Length: 114
Image (cartoon, one colour):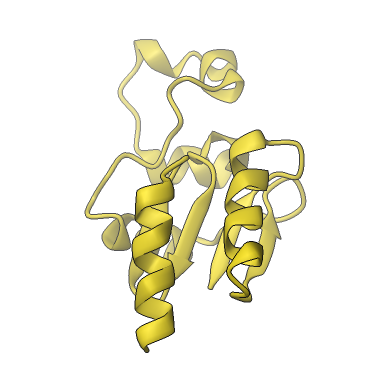
């Protein structure tokens, strides 16, 4: 399992704590140090059912002025990984975006079964 986020993000810390408390291991990817590749972003988008990957309520979104333009979410995230909706929890082909404890629980349960 992978968790993409940033250290200071409360939702990212919440996701990490959620899986640690259940004894489930994960690899943390700090988006301030390394962004996902194009292939990883495409897999995340597919795993999240095509959901929008960009956090339209975040500071990076406002700073880039994306509210007023058409954009390709993958291209924008490649240019600025902090646009990615956080946290991204990815297990196999499934992904949960944002602060979603119900989605995390479903992933945790599927990991315990598998």
